[in-house]
Figure 1 (cartoon, helix red, strand yellow):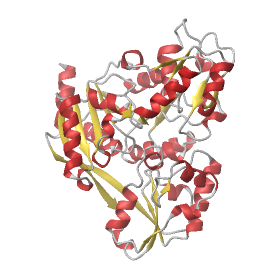
Figure 2: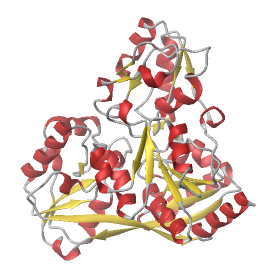
Figure 3: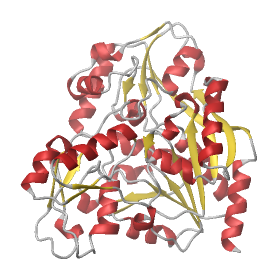
Figure 4: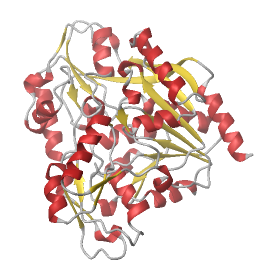
Amino acid sequence: MGAAGRDFHDFATFFRENPRFRVRCFTAHQIPFIDQRSFPKELAGPGYEEDIPIHLEAELSALIDRYDVDIVCFSYSDVSHEEVMHRASIVQAAGASFMLLGPKHTELHSSCPVVSVTAVRTGAGKSPLSQALASHLVGRGLRAGVIRHPMPYGDLRLQLVQRFATAEDLDTHDCTVEEREEYEPYVARGLTIFAGVDYAAILAAAEKESDVILWDGGNNDTPFIKPNLRIVIADALRAGHEMAYYPGETNFRSADVLIINKVGEASADAVQLIRKHAEEACPSAAVLEADLEVEVSDPAAVRGRRVLVVEDGPTVTHGGMSFGAGMLAARRYGASEIIDAREHAVGSIAEAYEAYPHMDRVLPALGYSEEQRAQLKSTIERAAPDVVLDASPARVARLLSLDLPILRVGYSFKQLSGRPVFELVDEALAAARA
């Protein structure tokens, strides 16, 4: 059971070379359109003479019967503990066993020191820290190989190992909006980032040109590569989620460094609750507090204007946040009106609001296909804003060639308390080399 990422990695690390198992199919969830593909037989290894089909998760019970399935392996992230057990109950009611694979069976080992940045929920603020950390390592004269959690949403045969160092690389690999959100900020900083399908091959490629590996996690998933230092981010705006979502709680309990993020917008009680949980679940972790500093390209251009806010897609859809940095910027800099994008949504964008009714007026940056990107553009144009506040790291407004005033919204990591995180990283790297 997957979402085009962890499922393929679990297959490659645990099932592919294991003669006791044969994978009959994958199921697809969270990511639109991925059920319209199959997993290529060329990547499946010996014994697979046909591609492995990918079906919608909604068909799970019928698939267990159709393929005479013995075991169902749950292999995606950012799901509440309650929802995980609902899936387990569906599987067991259909007669099969339910499996969760752990780090011992899925983490790869690197010849380089590894630092991982993961979180307890999607949208907690991993990317600003990961990008700042990569720049810090380069500033120290180290070659930092950034490896990103997978987002292979295209032709899997062409996405075995992907290397992004220039803007042209993003075009060459025909990256979706969601992929660009993660890769482009690194490229803009002059950094190289790796991703794809086969993480053993990806790691080998990164090691050839790196002194240290930085794992930039996706959603709240656990690392694919065994780290020397595990940095985990908890979200003070979603206090309590660190103990309620899978596999975010696994990250939380494994933390060497725990960063309580977004404390500037959170209550003291929320921060204290996370600290209490940290004392119980990861008492040896160094606990820091931090915030995300919102930046707008021209703050004065927001005041008194009708604004449409475009937010990072995963954060405000399956990440569960009702808004993000774009909404904060609109409020902070005095927009006269924040347009309700729901009233203007078309096609799959309108369907996203039905699937995620918690979103507060903002427009999620969804662009998993050319058709969906066209629907996103149409939604923006139908809203007819004075200004588009583009808080998507992928610079969606530019990709869509909009003939509207566009202001970029960004955010940077700002540590507020505790030992400097870069100091902790430097110490861990020195210990790894000793």
